[in-house]
Every structure is written in C-alpha cells, then in structure tokens.
Image (cartoon, rainbow, N blue to C red; front, side, top):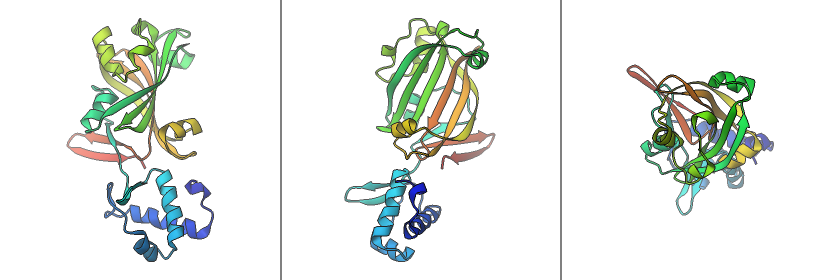
Length: 252
C-alpha cells in the first residue's frame, strides 16, 4: 500500500491529517505520536481508519512502530555535506554521524566507457571501466545506493574481494594507489526510483528520492569516478554551508 493507493475518502482524510500533523514543530524526528484512541478522536476518524493511514506512513518511512513503546516520527539518519570538499568517503561520514557504517556489494563488473562517460572521466570512448554498485547502511538500515564508474587504468588489480567486507573504496584508493579524493562536481535532482531500487532501500514503489550524479576528482584535479548516489528519502539529509550561514536541506 502507498499514498497513491489511498482512494477511500476516510483513509485519505486521515493520511492527509497526519501529514499536516507531522509538519508541526511538536513532531520533530524521534517524537512519539499520541495514543491511537485520542489521535483518532482529534482527527475525527475511527481507530481502524487511523491505523490504515499510519500503516501507509510507516511503509513510506515517515513513521515507525516500536514494540511496547508506540509510534514514532522517523528522521534523517545520515547528514551528508553538500558544499564541502569530499575528504571522506561515505563510511567515514556515517561514522561522523555516530552510526555504524555497513556496505553490501551488489555487483562488481568490467565494462567499457560510453561516449558521455568517457568525456566526463577524460578517457577514450571504449576504455575499460569498473562498475561497482553498493548498498550503504547505517546501523543496519539502508540509506543509499551508490554506483561507481572508475577507469580501470587508475586502479589496476582491484577486485571484488577488496570491497566485499565493506571497506572504504576511497581509503583503499589512497593506500594502494596513492589516489586522494579532493572534490566533486555534480547535481542533485528528485527522481522516481525503480522498483528494484525501492526494494533495496526499503521504500514504497513509485517513491521519489534525491539522486546525486557527479564526477569525483583527485588532489591533482583529475577525474577518478563518475558516481550515481540514490538516497533514501527519509534517512538522509544534505547539509549546506555557505560562509557563516548553515542550512540543512532535508530530503522529504
């Protein structure tokens, strides 16, 4: 079930009322919802109707039920820097957020560079590429899917086994190849994720997420990676820092 399937008017009314409630300052991440009986009375719906609306919001990742505790508002798990130089990989960023990083290698394939990818990576069309896709987790919860396209000539001898245990790709590149990540150039846009991607991230089909596409550069200004990062809409926020001002852009 998802919000797009709520056609029964009472269910839709309860769903929209809950969304309005979650926008209030009293219901920040980690806040507990009132008891179902009083909440249903306040919203003017039955407890069964309320429970169906809550189920949808749980499926969408906006709420979570905790056994013997109640229903709580979920919030961003990982805060990712948006305007700062990339000096840490996602594993280190996860640690800095106070969470235990995890990584599942989904595939590690050899490919060749298309015309567009070759232009971004400053290599010849048809040059060998390594395509690596990993599911990144924080405290066991999936928060992003990352697909890396790396010129094979920059990382000779790199094999899937190097990443199976969830080690940092950037740390490995620094230690083994003396390649140090320094900056990126990319863009973020709202995109509907595929059903397979939704299943991996644990979100509803048809859900939109923030998708980053960009080129990662080393300390010499040479492109080393074309990265596509699909971020969970409720478990990631991007932090923007401009001079003395800081703004948090939350993925909603």
